[in-house]
Amino acid sequence: MMKSKEGFIHSIESFGTVDGPGIRFVIFFQGCPMRCQYCHNPDTWNPGGGEKMTVEELLKEYEKNKGFYKTGGITATGGEPLMQMEFLTELFTEAKKRQIHTCLDTSGILYTEKKKEAFQNLFQVTDLVLLDIKNSREEGHLKLTRQPQKPVLEFADALARAKVPVIIRHVIVPGITDSREELEGVGTLISRYPNLKGLEVLPYHTMGIKKYEELGLSYPLEGVESMSKEEAKNARKIILETIKKERMKRIKE
Ligand code: SF4
Image (cartoon, rainbow, N blue to C red; front, side, top):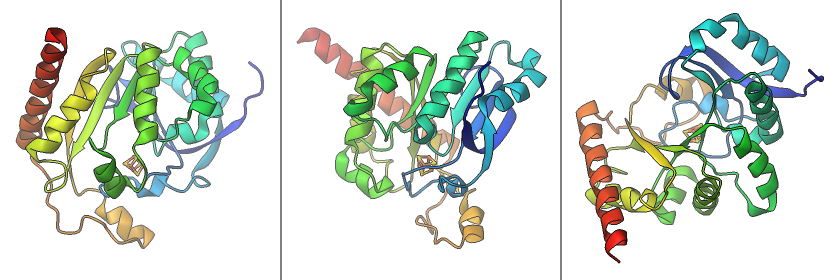
């Protein structure tokens, strides 16, 4: 293998079970341009933090337990892995040479048409994308993440064109994204993607608060209570019903 460049890695989870199918080697990339109010990993935001590692070093770590990953693979998450696009593409390219399943957990925020060829190269070595849809509308997205929504939607469209399987992830925050209108908005938005393979609705939790204290940051959702799994389940049901309804409408048109 040629000498690979270094990436900034926040941490590694050797036996991940929630970020993609099977048991996975989960790599948390350092750096994120979003500032989601509910983020529980603010320690991944700084792009210059973490530990420098090469693709070779990461895959060597993977190989140590590769017997466990037979139905799993590698997941790149963060932070925002797209902040280290070249490194990520190199990692997934090497992984695919070894027949390892590759999964990218991303907000899609760094997509730009100018870099569409680079994204095509990445898509060719990506088996699955976990795409975080933060909000159904521009205004809500901006408020929740401090970033515009347009790149996310363009990224989702590019994934659809490239036929990359996508599982949508959506965090429900009480009082912010839990209204019926917003849930139906999300359902309508994602109903148009033919490459949609699943929907994960994640209830907001307060487990990240301590990290904000340690970093000397004020916590944006002070006073907002965690959401129960049951409420998240109901929210998921509303989104799924909307997807079905919207798709039926389109068939009839
Ligand atoms: S995209 Fe993820 S890592 Fe970045 S701020 Fe949002 S929740 Fe945190």
